[in-house]
Image (cartoon, rainbow, N blue to C red; front, side):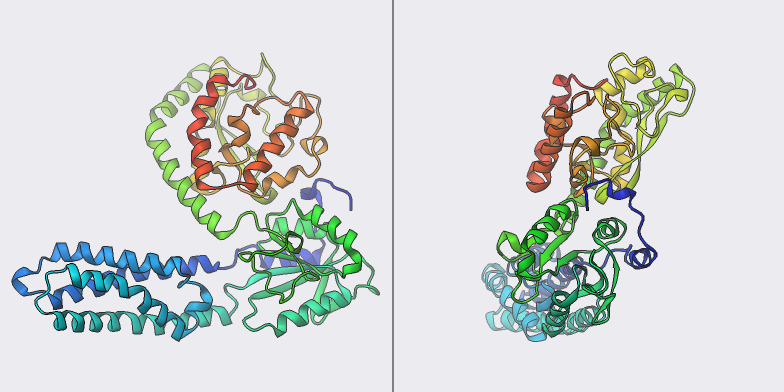
Length: 483
């Protein structure tokens, strides 16, 4: 399989049907933990409030003060539970473990609360607290345990996976997964380039639905979490080749040959050859989404007058719509529609992005030149951020037909260019604040931009996003490549 524009590969009918079923993402264990945290904050706060009410003399009881202490105690319990892993699915699925974690995490705030609160009688305080916590913990843990066990048994939080490679090694993997207690991996197909003799059409009930090229396109079209390479030790060169090919994917890639228990747990420390980590894990997805919504709303609150003035200037200078819509590559190479203020004459716009904007480009209006130079034309993309198509910070999305000044496709200039789509694209990014923005008139410019994007993906953190976000205005003053 040669490297190519994977989005141009058309899936066969079998792979299309499976991808269609898997287009909606599975329920992540993290979301269950978040729901449990929200419920527990309320439940423990209520329990502590009633404990203080029962332990304090009537004339000394202050409802608002008690509420404050109750919320503080609840926060301490829930935070301790999070740190100790008390909200992991396997803990919540075990009644004894779930209750035990809860009681253990409640001890410290209870002791401190009894010591500091103006209690009327120590024995009364202990009895009141014990009763309140029992009423809060036992029913919620038993009910939560039943729900979590049902969710696990029905496969709602199972990790969706496909196999790269068939034959005996695939059969060994399938048997190993079926024999593993608490297996949370569900297999949905096999992809292999070998003929049906070396790699049968079906292995222990799992059908072969395509080759390795189909696998790349399949991951683009569906929401799966894991690709497992099932090839023997003797095929080490083939394995390394597949790993190189799959580096463009945002999913975790595991190796059955190097796995001892077939768990493929991305939170464990394992040799680097055992897997490729998932670039957009649930923790990253949640943190990025909260970051994006908060700062996008802040930006709209600050820049709405600028946006109104820009819209009026565009309307007064030339006829046509104020906004320009363009299809670009988003997360996992999927197509998104990006909004911008129109900076060209309406009859000269380039929705496909085939012709790069150059210095003194006659298509760009006078207002448009200022908007592009100052990046004000990008402000409508804040609505893309709120919609979830873009992130505030990430690799910049390029038009579907984007080309350099020499009319070369970006994928022709840089091998594996789509690897930069393993995180959602952003309005600004690491490459942009380091000066790699604007016209691509030299292959080295695109290569440098690509390397900066990969650095960002491999080193992502909330702090890096903050750094990029606050350095973006300063980078605009020294930017020379935007026309």
